[in-house]
Amino acid sequence: MEIPWFVESQKEYASRGLVVVGISLDDGWKSVKPWIKEKKVNYPIVIGNEGLGKQYGLVGMPLTALADREGRIADVHQGIVQKTATQEKIRDLLTGVWPVSRDSFVSGATSRRRIACRMKLGAKPARSF
Image: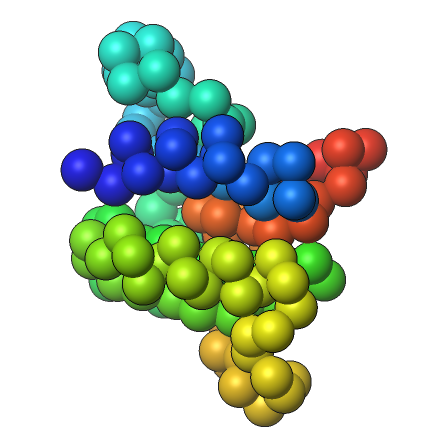
């Protein structure tokens, strides 16, 4: 259900700096590649593992995280996201409106690594994950 929204968001907001990154916790590419083709995923997918999930406090799937242009985690949501609310947060982050202060950022292990983000705003093309 979320994947089509992420594909749509990547199309709509890429020119403004949105980069969607999917992290699969499957055992490898064998099952992931056909899924990518079937879903017509237009954003990068990386393979994670149980250790990565533990490092970022993953307690359920899916996990959606939004990061600002500096790579700071601004919002984390466990479970299925609501499309309208997530799109509003993306638009606000793209315009620099939200979050207003550094104190409103989510803290903890999730904020330490950008690779844990499913959505990252403002990635520079030369930067790799």
